[in-house]
Image 1: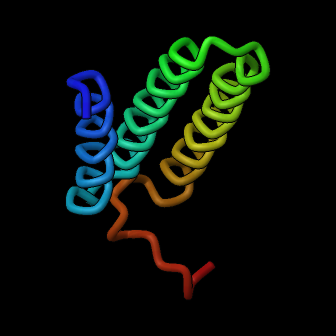
Image 2: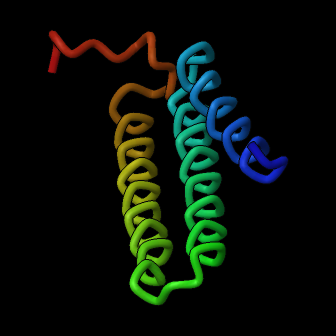
Length: 98
């Protein structure tokens, strides 16, 4: 494993660990998801450069488009949650009351 692959794998795993262990605020969960998507985007971009083929060249841009859609949906949910519940704490969200 090259140091570049190790760096991107570590960045993805740190984002996953942050998402799994620090679940107090919705904003921190969204930031961890964005960190994971950023590490996936950079790894996929370098992978397409290493393969030197044009068939995979659209993959990083497609992942970036999906990441932007995920970020906008997450921020919309954050605003809606903050307006209805008054806070973004994940402990205050109860699916049985919805």
